[in-house]
Length: 87
Image (cartoon, rainbow, N blue to C red; front, top):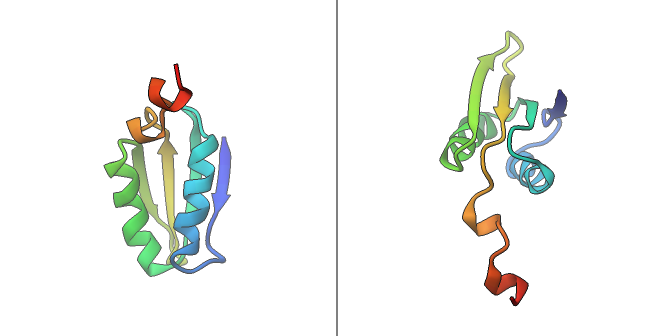
């Protein structure tokens, strides 16, 4: 399982780094994400659920949030279409 530590950064950097990671992720891939920034702890779980990913949250005693993310199907906007491929 992969581990993505986003605790050193403040909003919006954690979301940007997560979006870059998701570009390369495959459906079913599992990663643990760790967040410290208060805005990111609130926004990122909601963002991932809105995209259709499976997210389990676990608050840590050090005021960080750990997320267990199972990547869902790639949203249609990220899936190449016939138009994009110029079929």
